[in-house]
Amino acid sequence: MNTKIICGDAIAELRNISSNSVNLIVADPPYNLGKDYGNNHDLKGFDEYLEFTKQWLTEAKRVLREDGTIYIFMGVRFISYLYNLLDRELKLYFNSWITWHYTQGLGKTKGFSPRHDDILVFTKSKKYNFYLDNVRVPQKYYRSRNNMRGANPGDVWLFSHIHYCNGNRQKHPTQKPEGLIERMILASSKEGDLVVDPFSGSGTTLRVCQQLKRQCLGIELNPEYVENTKHRLNQEFTGFDSVDERMSRIPNDLNDNDIRDEYLSNHAEWFLKNHPDAMQEFEKESERKYGNRVRKSKKTEHQEISLFDYINEKNI
Image 1 (tube, rainbow, N blue to C red):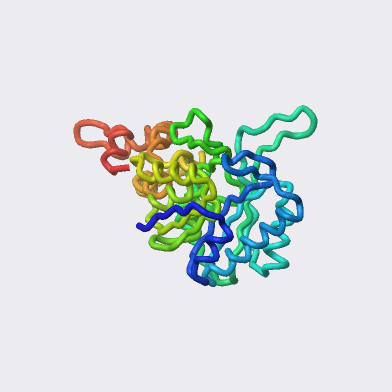
Image 2: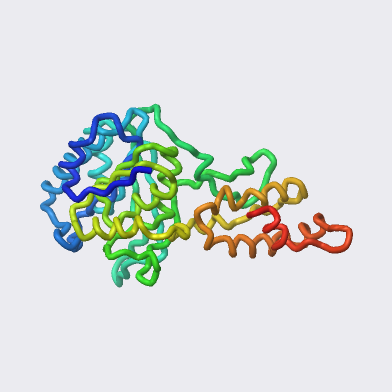
């Protein structure tokens, strides 16, 4: 697939993109908190920052297809102003307000320590694409009236930060987890669609799109980050660097042998396709919940088949 990174200013480069041509925009703009991004600092005057935001969002709306979607990360200081711009000034359609909850963050001695970022999801029209089956999560309990494929993940997403000891950690202060971006890409685009990231940073969106067979254009102001992204795109893929902990969950009450066999044989394909590191936890959970029942139901003439062998037999 065509995956491209451009070194340049987001507003200027967005103006070079044809109108109504982009299926999905994933944007993680600077939060205007004074972070050091190498060749620039994230610190503008209040009104200057709002004007900058309005300019790039205006171009983002122009390039989006009528059925397109935009996801935007934002910190608490400007989230309300961002919502106002999207809703009242640009007349986009509100879809979701996602809370990304992470387990570690800055500590505070007065007040509550922040443990989340916000992600606003807007669409260009009421007719937009959303592929729920691609992003379902395993249910807590199996019921015949429910979709075996899983449940809607909801608007609170739990993904750990990419810690500095992680092998995929890049030289960037605000790197986002691949599993987080994966959910956005799978939910709001299909293979071959064009995804744009106007603030590419560490290149996570491009890396995810590369593996999920989407076309992707990244725009990044810092030439060092551009070169790092190019190197990242050439690395061997061994699985995304983060996963929703619920993906290894196996529903309770899978009591029917045939239903349980069908579910276990499909779980990895449905939920862990790009997360081989999570397979071990899935196998442990399978053994803990259903090991004895599966062995009993899969007896051969001479011996019982263990769940581990059964999983391998099913190519999970």
